[in-house]
Image (cartoon, rainbow, N blue to C red):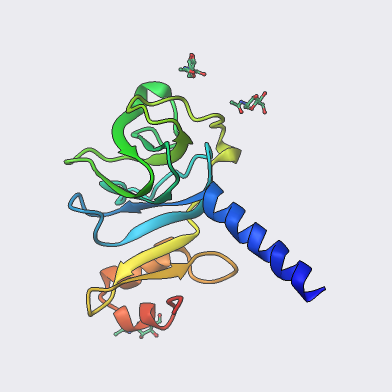
Length: 176
Ligand SMILES: *[C@@H]1O[C@H](CO)[C@@H](O)[C@H](O)[C@H]1NC(C)=O
Ligand SMILES: *[C@@H]1O[C@H](CO)[C@@H](O)[C@H](O)[C@H]1NC(C)=O
Ligand SMILES: *[C@@H]1O[C@H](CO)[C@@H](O)[C@H](O)[C@H]1NC(C)=O
């Protein structure tokens, strides 16, 4: 019984690691740094957005599977197609797109390696995922993550703590 449970858990974990990518929208243009709002465990072809207005000057796609592309749009729901940005961020691995001043308001990841943006499969408002994690650099410059949701502070409240320089309040909420 224990063994079956372990095998099931292993399969579930493996399937998750293959099928989900963390997509983080950063406040800084340079190198995916500063605070970020993230759609962690984002499923393929699901839109992450709309990003808070100060975010999206760079985007980190974490854990892209092989033969995939991290995509971005200046439109806030991965649409319309004319707002698609040629990111050229191909998996496997972690990739950081920087806009050079251009801001992306939504993102997704999809199979295929073309730099060309395809429509995200379905981009009606109900199908966009909002941020479920907040990232910031602590006093030591180490990036920390705080889950959003479940009755805890919202993205805006966490961002306000960061802007106020209240890192101790953020450190009390971080994951580890
Ligand atoms: C993208 O979506 C638009 C609007 O739904 C459609 O007109 C266009 O043909 C689509 N493009 C691709 C490449 O699927
Ligand atoms: C998008 O959603 C519509 C309606 O729910 C569905 O008919 C269509 O097949 C979906 N398109 C893709 C590419 O998944
Ligand atoms: C930091 O935030 C916490 C929680 O909101 C608050 O209790 C505390 O007074 C704040 N500290 C400062 C220095 O603003």
